[in-house]
Image 1 (tube, rainbow, N blue to C red):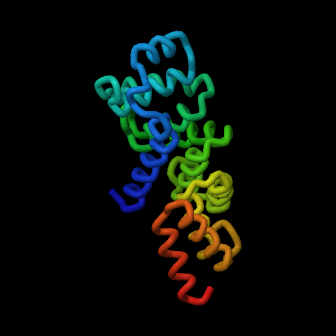
Image 2 (tube, rainbow, N blue to C red; image 1 turned 180 degrees about the vertical axis):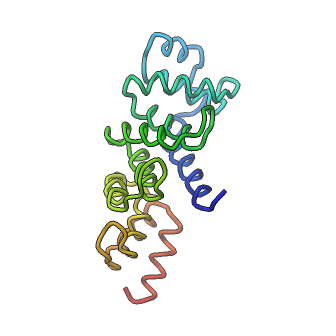
Image 3 (cartoon, helix red, strand yellow; image 1 turned 90 degrees about the vertical axis):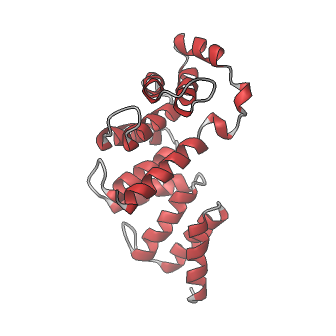
Length: 202
């Protein structure tokens, strides 16, 4: 497996967890039986949360295939978090056959609803040329949308793109600014790149 693929998987898993209820809620507050009942009634958000519970093994035995099933039901109702999560499952091939094209399709649906994690992931798809033709300009466009919502990975990649002139005009000062913003968001690579450019006199 290439380093790019490993980095992508780590980033997507981190993003998936960051945009899940587990980032804001403690596990005991989630009642599996109650959530399952609501999900079976067709409540999209409950279907998404049930998918997370199966996918993470919280309150129920982990079952990736069931996670995909519930993510899909919620995603088909337009639930952005579920669309993003389903995209992640297709991207890394968990609970479903790995499929870059399907991953991009679901990332795009969530990204168009303003989901920052999906915007970053769609940007990565264009950046790496996975599931779509490589297009640095489109990657920069989606990274910017995500970065404006505070996504540290998107901020870092914008810095990289401005530094090397990929999809945007080369501008080291702007690259340094994006690295700095990534650092402020907790991205250590952003801190390292900011320090490097700072020492170089930029």
